[in-house]
Length: 198
Image 1 (cartoon, rainbow, N blue to C red):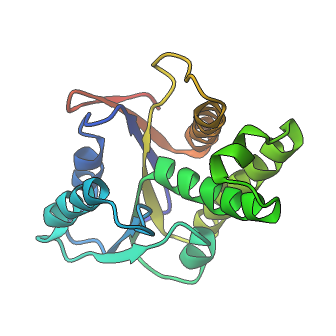
Image 2 (cartoon, rainbow, N blue to C red):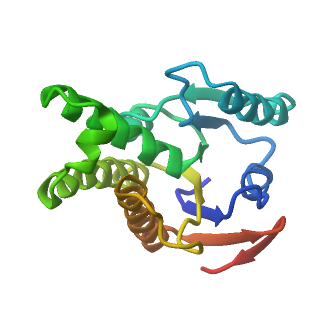
């Protein structure tokens, strides 16, 4: 299997994860990178994770739960392919991981700290997230491994009402653009129907 990067985007419950899973060869040695790492009790998130796990039970895949240092993990591993599900959660987790430290250093509540973030501070956390993705892209380009990345298409709705969600929306959109640029194939899934864009 030659190295390639495939991006699968779509709205919530569009069928993008199912399509991404079906796109991988049954006989391939696949590592599923689950970025929805549970850091606090969340029944709704736990149910989503269990749904994804149930779909993978029949497949002989290895699961790696992480959102940090994914590029380093790929560079030091040897699978035929990776399924990273999903990019949006990885971005979110990296953002809040940084924001929690930022708030703590200023002795502020998290929401207050984010509301007070300057453009330079937003640029700093954005840069850290983009660096993580460049590390992943670079690791794939140096190996014969392939990756399918699932992401949420977040730019089709109204402009978010809060600064926090606007910052995240912008990061999601910019990361999606970079991944689409680097990808060999891009699919947009609508109501379970994949449309190839690239």
